[in-house]
Image 1 (spheres, helix red, strand yellow):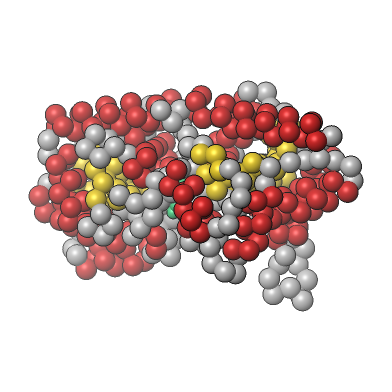
Image 2: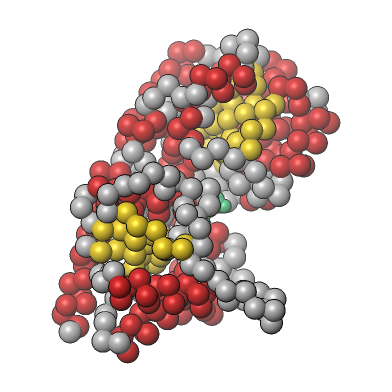
Length: 379
Ligand code: GMT
């Protein structure tokens, strides 16, 4: 198949899933055309069957806000025409689904039928999408999608609760390639972070409010009182400064390393002992799954789709949102009990296998096939 994939090129989970999906499809012989405003971070090397089309947005003094959606639609139309795309798969509804809808209608006028699949990732529904500034357009574009998927049952239910969706939503979980996470990680980072062999607690995110990074620092301050441990904070975003000052206020800044953005989590996670994800809401929690694939148990919140990924008391622990004391207690339970830690670590690896790329990617291929069959019947 010739597949156009529209995505955010940044470190966010939706972009990572979209890029890894495209790379996996290309390996299976499909031709994949990524479309975004800059090259996706995880698309870092030449790969057979993989192409990238940058959306250019010409500036003009009249535009206080550059019309990205129009430029994206035009890029989709051109790519579909010149590369003979069979279908377009958009990741994150805003503004990708409306752009794909418009491209499909323009292409119809040119005698081409190019269906589109929308995958909902989380904040496009739970935070941003349901805002009345976007809701009518996003509802319309979801209903117009030739296929609509969500990355967890939780996200499917949230979508049905908040939007007037009249079409079936298929749940296709996020995935990883566990083999990528089996390498030992970056030894230099480990030595730098924990020079005396301390345990390492890691968090990776975009440091937005929804991630509640302050809870990590508060929990860490409690854990550090009891056992030698260091905190490795990976990523950057609006809450980072606040987290750094809180670490100073609580006297744990010297034991905390803020490394900023790192392209590939496989460098970081294998060096870690525990992964923290105390979010307010998390439709899936891809970074937690990545940690599990390395055998790193997860301390997270009982929020959103997390319980579909994490098994409380087996692969880590889930606490109520904001209960950092419980998170600290759970972390200590694992860091100070080698036998229990080994059990949780093994269970994490085993559970991560359920989300193997080899299981999930064929689910997307089957949906593509279904959409293409419907297209043939419509002709
Ligand atoms: O977490 C973010 O803010 C990034 C966001 C995105 O769209 O890139 O992540 C969402 O999609 C990921 C991939 O499907 C999920 O693993 C995350 O749970 C989800 N984030 C939220 O729901 C907050």
